[in-house]
View 1: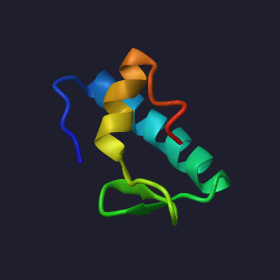
View 2: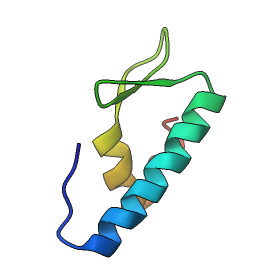
View 3: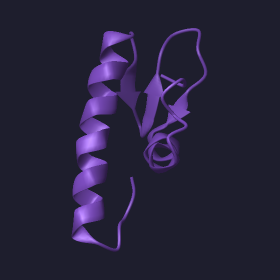
View 4: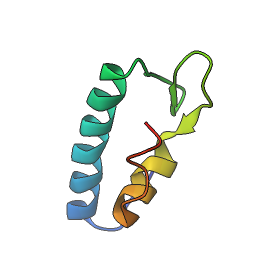
Length: 62
């Protein structure tokens, strides 16, 4: 899905992905081909959320 130049950044992104996936599942989303998907809702690219997390803007998307 994404590449990172530093190991620490990759680890933080992996940890954040796990949190997003858990939260998404709690709200009825599932992972499909790099997107968080929920019936009757717009698909949300995982990469968008990982990048947005560093800017603290994706929380309201899921």
